[in-house]
Image (cartoon, rainbow, N blue to C red; front, side, top):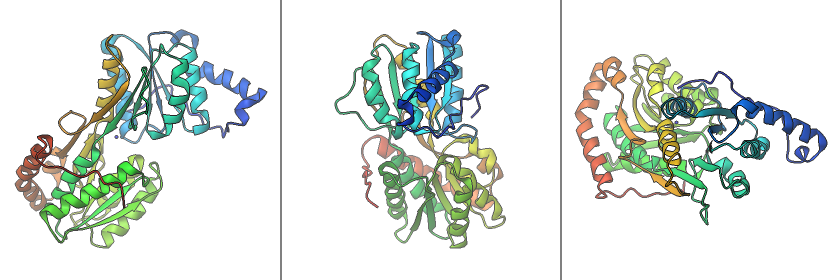
Length: 355
């Protein structure tokens, strides 16, 4: 779910695992090693962030880079930020960082699970953190995996969307259909139906987390079909969804996004956020890893943690359509009450990954 780095590493070469076996691959890996962690940056004081989605979209990666830099200034460690655009390079990148003695390696999303499992045992003095991950079975002593109960925020978004919508038609646009996002869809539907029995939710996946054009195409069609509130869950693809809402001037179209950085993209359309603050999550986990008592395992993050939340946009309150804003304010106490019930365990939202 901020900014850019001054020295991004873009690994665009179409390497394959077969290529990495040969002499040419060895040469490439040597050059890659120098670029990832030059001699002056190596050593136990380095915390490396390897992100598998591009920065620059006001989304999760930007937030992570920003918060890592903030923590580095507070704690006095060096950082290295690596954009791993090609899955074939993951193991090479992680091995290079491990060989250089990086103290902590943080990486993103489910796709790095297998490289972590393969390499972490060979680097027991490096602490490995995987953000947005399933638990490892068995757990590894030097690996922390972190999951997020984003679906709980989507339940609240569904309730809010159904109550604030003029049409009763909601939409959901995700990046790719994977179990956690499927659970988000089902929670959104459950929240909507809980407050409005005849609410309808249209669902689509863009097939990518980095395709704004596709997001705009899907959202435009949903809005044409009468949807007036869309929950996004698609990283960079979100920008196209917000653009589609912005084009519907006078139609009072709304988006619920993921990051406060999106407020400026749609001041009068981004009405709310199911906020997953990946930057704060990284900040929390790296802070823990810097402590001597750190141990591997799995961390589940939900509502009430400062990482997952459902929030009404203060920018939308100021710049959104007056009648819709008034309705949103009127509804909000009910949303806060529902949130409190979920946190207290009085309201159970099923985690259902079947579409």
